[in-house]
Length: 322
Image 1 (cartoon, helix red, strand yellow):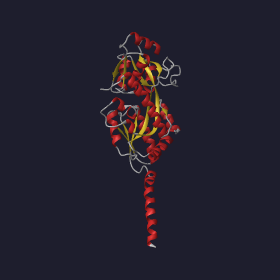
Image 2 (cartoon, rainbow, N blue to C red):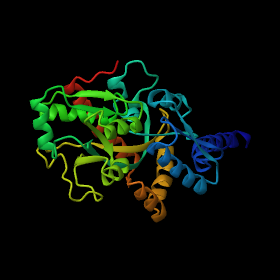
Image 3 (spheres, rainbow, N blue to C red):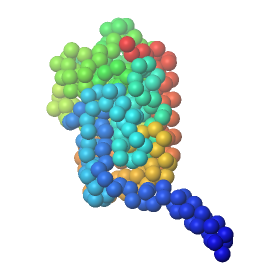
Image 4 (cartoon, helix red, strand yellow):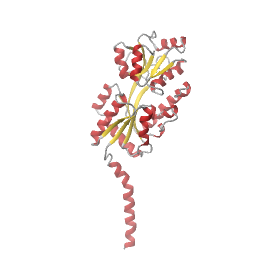
């Protein structure tokens, strides 16, 4: 009788052991979750992350906190070193999730090793110029730049930012030679654009539209593939003679390397549920952000597409970061 019961006991133990990961996942989260934002407080990334964290805290009935980093690369590294158990998540703009390793050699993470969890939101970039610039259209800007090689200046939030690579993309597509002026964030770049110290800046709708309405800058074109609802009469750069030109700023959630796909899918379902809520949609659109709904697989494909786009620009324009 005893000999017959031993296989049954062993079988039960094996079954219980295989069920433990699933049970742990069902219990997630059972303690505080930290959302790492590599940029400082007050940025669009930070505002979005805090909105998502607030909603997840209500849904999960667990504390969800946001921790800000002191810069994109240094701020991203703690997320790469964290345990892949779902208790540390990363909300970031494109750079650390796509092209960081194409630009920087000595950073403590690999962009392609993060586990995509969910796309969050996107916003169109616009080509904004100083109010005193003679060019009134993209075509006039390009003509001016070709007639004055090396004279046009464009600002960015720093080397490798979307604004930097958007300027490089325009240089390559239009055959221009411009001067890149990096800043430590969007605010100082905008301040110098308003003051007329730089000629142009690829900025987001959120900050540029109010400045344009106040007459402090001008917007020549929208850099997304389609026109922006906030600027229905402003053409896209693609419509202005450069088909396929695309530049958007987007934000996504990712997890430390080696997070189990099932856990990423579990978190994704809750994030998507939040993004579909009318009140959250309204708050995002008040920031001129457009929700991006999709699965981890959708996020993976999107990261790959963006890496290919900007990787091509980096190669063609010979962009390098010292």
